[in-house]
Image (cartoon, rainbow, N blue to C red):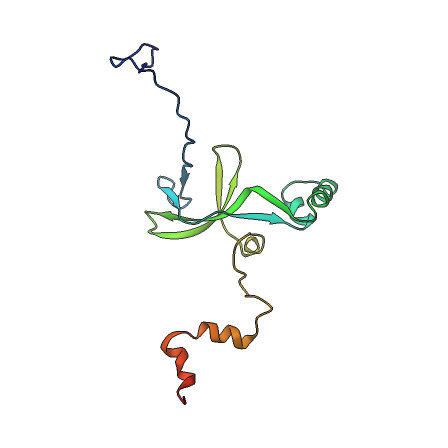
Length: 152
């Protein structure tokens, strides 16, 4: 290997630069000295409204052009929702992650509106095409759900 001065070490081999990408180092917003670790997949966000893009700093005209180009659904590649584990908190929590550049991220609590803009998540109010009876039956599992069939 070659040391920092560029001289080969005693083994005579040459070290190669690291090719694998380094892991993201995210810190807990509540405990800045503690690293947090991802425990879920990324749920990327998308935008369907001009107003949402204007909140992110685009002009109305540019927002209209972007949404028209992407057929009214614009995926946001630098924003997502992800669940992280913090050792100091000893719990998991969901965070809205924004990537500013290759190694800089910001974490904020997830507002309720962002869950409606995330891909791959279950709707909070449930599927609107499912009846109330089916929803109630799906929740009634196990022994407590069998009470209604006592007469059989």
